[in-house]
Structure formats: C-alpha cells, structure tokens
Image 1 (tube, rainbow, N blue to C red):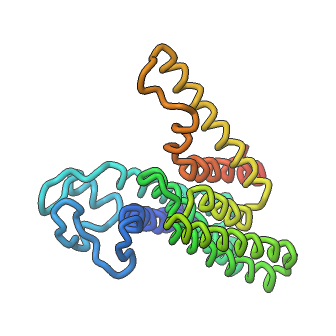
Image 2: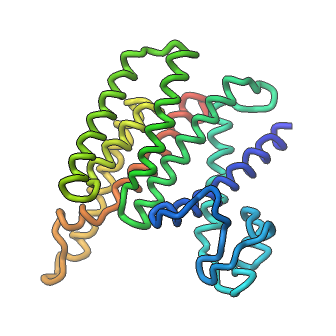
Length: 272
C-alpha cells in the first residue's frame, strides 16, 4: 500500500514540477500562471492534454514539440523528476504514510508543499534572471502569515515569536517601498532578507542559519576557484564585488536550504 501511496505523491510532485517550470518562465515576464493555457515558447501553439503529462509527455514526444518539432529543454524533464522525488522524500521524512495518515499530518505536508513551491520559484527565477522576484516574496509572506495563524491557533505556538516576524516583515516591506520610490526598483538585498524571514518561519532559525553558512561557503569556494583559474590573466578579470553582483545568491540559498532540511530531517528520523 505504501508503494501505491508514494507513487501518487510522486505523480503529484511531478505535476508541481511541471508547474514550476511554467511559473519560473512566466512570472518574470508578468504572464498569468493559473488561467492562461500552456503553449510552446517557440511556435506559441497551445498544448493539448497529451503534451502536458509530466515526464511521460517528454519521453513519448522524444523531447520535441509535437507541432514545430523544436527540441524541448531537458530541464523540464529533470525538474519534474526531481520535484516528484522531493515530494516522496519529504513525505517519507515527515512520516506521511497510508497507515498513519491523519488530518494534521496532511495539513503539515500541505504547508510544506507551499513552502517548497516558494523556495523552488525563488531559486529558479534567480538562476534564470539574477532576480529576487517581489511577487514570489509576497506569496511567501501570505503563506507565512497563514502558517503562523495555524500554529498559534491550532498548535498553541508562541504568539510573541511570530509577532516579531510580522514586525520584521513590515520593516522590510517599508524599506523596500522606500527603495522602490527612490530607485524605481526593489533591491536584491531586500529581497534576500525577506526570503530569509520566510525561511525562518517555516523551518526555524537553526536550519536557516546553517543554510546561510553553507551559502557563504559556496560563494567563497566559487570566488576562490575563479581567482585560481584567472590568476595569470591581466585583462577582463572581475573583482569580488563584480562577481558577487552576478552570483545568484537566492539560488544557492534555496539549494542549501533544501539540502540542510533533508540532512536534518534524516537525522531526526534516524535514517542517517
């Protein structure tokens, strides 16, 4: 029964993965991600049902668009498989199985899916566009507030702790608004800080801090390798400041957060 249950979870995760690829592509372009029908980005032909089934459509179509025969980027297949795998892995780590299924566990998993969606959209958009998207951050704030209300009302969590996070949200949004009026755009740093607040609410300060440390280590290693690779060059070598501006910090932060979550939850469930 558990195999069937986790197969269903994998399929749901794969569909989310398909949605993630669509959202990462459309959100920066400010296109609708819920109502507008899926289409081929090359020929703009609307896709049919058989073109939209995660993983299988890519395989059966040979990695090409049914209409214009243009190759479909492998990242679509990869993200669908990874998303399905992550859904199964976290469902297992959270103790979600057919024998011990409960409303509270389903709600917790539902909140986790909302959070995972936030992280994946953030890291995906940052990797593609070097941008922390404000609309995705607003989504993160909304689900955080709903999650805090759930914790305070249902699980009787410390309301003062989450009150502090609400104040931090207000402060950061105020600063972001001031920055927006002054420079006509939101700053990358403000976006990262808001992202960190959302992370702390969902996964706690400990995991968030470790995620930050790993992100800094990744950046340090990248800068070191870049210097070693280009130490003999004299021209066109970027400074640390120039490199840091081009680095997708949100991407590294999101990846670090997911990996730290897997390790910590594995230790808690005594898998590692």
